Image 1 (cartoon, rainbow, N blue to C red):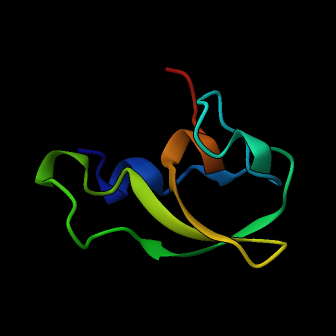
Image 2: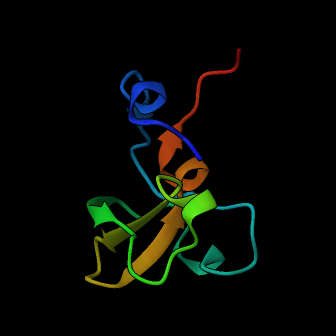
Length: 73
């Protein structure tokens, strides 16, 4: 589980990008975060999955690495 403390310095990507097959057709689209996905989510992945709205109005769930630039430590 990723903590809020870990997320505080992360920067949002300008566009959605996924390496996964699901939602790959949305790569390159601008987005806004609606909120953290919490309903029906296992405790160990809370804080890692977000509800987002893409520029075309499509709403999907996105993993943190699809929408954030994650610092490499």
